[in-house]
Length: 294
Image (tube, rainbow, N blue to C red; front, top):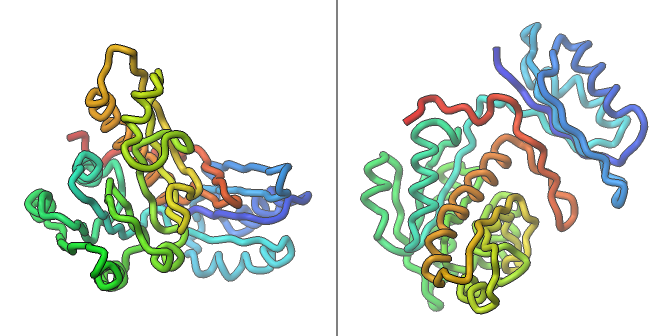
């Protein structure tokens, strides 16, 4: 039996949860998981519900029937088929740890996505990508050809039907135009615990400040460099005895895990934009299960 999800954002008021629960029950659906958040500062209400259609109703029919409820409560809403694998384009430069981690998670089914292309401005990872039967595109980027290179990148995104771009340590700054066009659909991994130590060589900055924690941040990409809404973060402990190179090595694992968790949240529609912040609901039971273990 296919599991669906309903995501809702609206102004907080009485009766929202009851209206959703009653609608699903009246339409032969059984709720299997639910998360909600009432933001007292903004007055916004967020909800995500997983459910099964036990009477065979499909999403288009449920969407049409829900329109009256949504209009009454002035909701922004969407229905999702949780078996759908989101089409993803990965972009990478010369650091391949996040790319390799994503390919492994994709291969075993731990990250249920459809990787439709990998784009790089270098050739280092052509072989590993092609060996996974994934199209590889090398597009060199310079100051002189940046606009043309981005046009080629966007053509690949559009032709492949990609719904999400993942910057897996892609070290080129995207243009404002591309950021706006793909707003809410580009996820980056930053090798620092933002908002601290932004910009170039954050591990060296952290080392020079004698930090005891290093971290990584995954966020949506906006026109403001490294200022997009944060989806996921994590840290690793370090000591005074470790070098900047140790920080880099320890950071690789954190970066890979944080990026994978951010993608997992996005593809399961658990992330809601809330101004400059995000609301990220917990994963539904079973959503981390792999199709195979290795």
